Length: 145
Image (cartoon, rainbow, N blue to C red; front, side, top):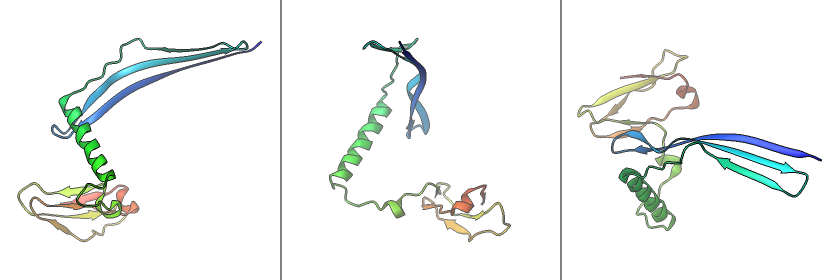
C-alpha cells in the first residue's frame, strides 16, 4: 500500500501599467490559492483547490483600452496592415532619452571603472534618442548632464 500527498500554495498578484496616469494598477489584488493532490494505491486521485478569499478581478476603462489597442496593433502587424515595418534590431532599445524640457539638453555617460566620459550627446527640445550602452557600460553607470 502506498500514498502520495503533495501540497503547494500560490500567491498571485497581477498589475498593468496605466500609461495615462503613469502608474501600475491592480488587475488581481494579492490572492492566495492552495493546491493539494492525494494519490493512493487504489485508482482514486483527489485534487483540491482552495482559497480563503474570493478572486477579485478589476476591469477598468484604462485596462480595457490598453488591451484593445495592444491586441489591435498586434493583429494589424500580424496581418501586414501596418504602414511601416518595425526592425527589432534598430527600433527597440531599453533606454531612451526624451527631452520635454523645452531647452536643449546635453549629456555624457561615464563607466564606473573609468574617469573618461563618452562623447557628449545633445538632445533638442521635444526630441528623443536611444541611449545605446554596451554591457560593460550598463553596470554601475553614471549619467552626467
